[in-house]
Image (cartoon, rainbow, N blue to C red; front, side, top):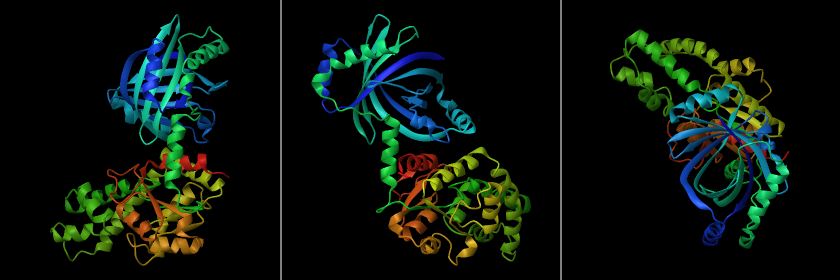
Length: 416
C-alpha cells in the first residue's frame, strides 16, 4: 500500500491552448495520457459525501484497478488536503472488492469517466501535477495537485507552495470548481431524473428492482421443471416467456411436449411457489436488501412519499415488510391481487396515482423490466430503469443506472 499527502485545487477549463503554453513555460512535462473510470462509494448516512472523504475504485485504461481511500478533507484556503492510501488490484478483482465494500455498508454513489492528461515536475521532495480532464457528460476541467510522500512538513507550508504554483496560471482567469467530480456527476444524475414538476413521490417496482427476486424465481421454476419433467429451462426461455410476458412459460413447455397439455398449470405453479418461498426467505437475509431499504427510509425522512407497485403476490410483500420491519415504509402497496390486468398494462400505476391523489408530473417510477417500464410510461410517469440485476438496458428508456446511485443522488440533493 502506498501513502502520500495530496493538496489540490480544481477549476473549469475553457482555454486549452493558453493552458498548454503556460504549462510548458512552467517547466512541466507530459507524463501520462490515459482513460480513467472512477467509481465512488459512500457510507449509509452519506457522511463520506459531506466530509469529502474518498473511497474509490479506479479502472485505468482497463488494465488494472486502484482502490483508494482518502480520509476526511482538511479544508485550507482555496485548497483541499488529504492523506491518500492506494492498493493496486487486478481487473478480475472488481466484483469481489465491490462485494466486500457492500458487505461493509458502502454504496456505489457515482461513476466518473474521464480522459486525463497529466503534466508534472518535481522540486526537491515535492511533486507538482497539472491534470487536464475531459469528463464524460460534464465538460473540461483542470486540477492542480501537490504531492508529498512524507508527513514532516506543515500543511500550511504545503498549501503555500501549491498556491504559489497556481498563481503562475492566473492569466487564464479560471473559474473555481469547488465540488468533487463525483458530486458533479451525482448532481447531474439528480437533475436528469426529476419529473416535470416538483418531485413529491417515488413509485417502486419490487422484483428485480429493490430485491433480486427474479433470479430466485427463475431458480425455483428451473428446479421444479427439472425434477418433475427432466428438462432444464434456460434463462433465455424464462426471460422471454415470464419477464417479457406473463405466465407463458408453462404454455410454451406444453407446446413443446415437455409437459402434458392436460396437466393443470396451477398445480405446477403451486410447487414453484413453495420452492420460491424458501428462496425468498433466504434472499431477505442478504445484506444488500437491508441496505436498499435503509436508503428508502432516508428518502421518506426527506418528506418524499413512497409507493410499491408490484406484480408480486401480496403474501410475499407482507413477508418482506414484516421481516424488515418496514410496515409503514410505503404509503400504498399494490400487488398482483389488486389489479385485473398485470404489467405491461398501466392499471397498477394509474391506480397508484389515484390512491396517492398525485399528478404523474410530480413523481417518478423506478423499474427494471421492459414490461414494467411500459406500464409506468403508459401512465405518463417519468421512469428510471435500474440495472443492478438485469443484463441489458431497455431500448425505450432514457436513464439506466444502479439503484444506489439514483437514490443517493436524491438523498443528497433534495432540499428538506
